[in-house]
Image (cartoon, rainbow, N blue to C red; front, side, top):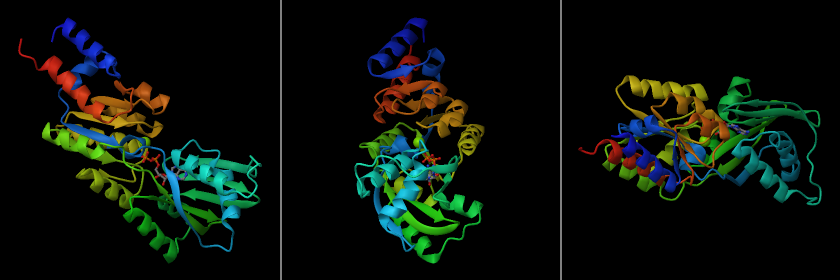
Length: 298
Ligand code: ADP
Ligand code: MG
């Protein structure tokens, strides 16, 4: 392609809300034959909502949610925001806008959070977090977890003083058109893979809904990048589509990193292409544009 063609291609992209950071990014996109999609906030809407709660302790929901929200209010994670939103809705004193004080707050990326609230040690997160810190998961919690996963929801466990006290089920629906995008990519000869920090059960349920055949779950940020490198080593030209801080190593590792415009600044900086409208369809538009610019017979 001539420099003029590249300029035209980049300009057409910009006019459609696809920000292509230079000619190299536009060129790499036409060779892409494998796309790795992050789940939360990329394939899904990214605005999770609490759909149900099971409390195993003798504790009122308001009391339970006070402890959980006091911990999660310190986290930027979309799941944390969903929990705090829900806690606000069910609190008795709606006028009161503060939570109990949280001490020793710690965030464990890709796993959850913990803090000390009202002299109680509160741990909020996934099974891997609980197992890492030797918190036993009782049968009733295992059953509840399996139920949420089968429904494509995410089950968040809550431990009070190192004992499982309850589980919160959170739903984050698929973006409209996600399934169609995967099917169109397939017809274009592009393989789709889903990678997520979420658990295997939920990940498999979401993959089924989108008809993505390959899933990598319970992946920490570095793990996401390693998967990209493995795919490259087996001969694929790989694009990564993601929105989170946890996706940025993978966005950098990919041949083409595509960030969702509504995502975090760190992901947007790490990417080669930014989908300003946050539409998944624009992944196809970007590849089409690159193919038209670089595969044209001169
Ligand atoms: P994804 O790759 O789907 O964007 P993350 O890597 O951000 O997911 O998180 C992976 C998992 O870690 C979440 O599905 C959740 O189980 C747990 N987790 C992370 N942060 C939190 C938090 N603040 N509160 C509760 N659970 C969390
Ligand atoms: Mg994400």
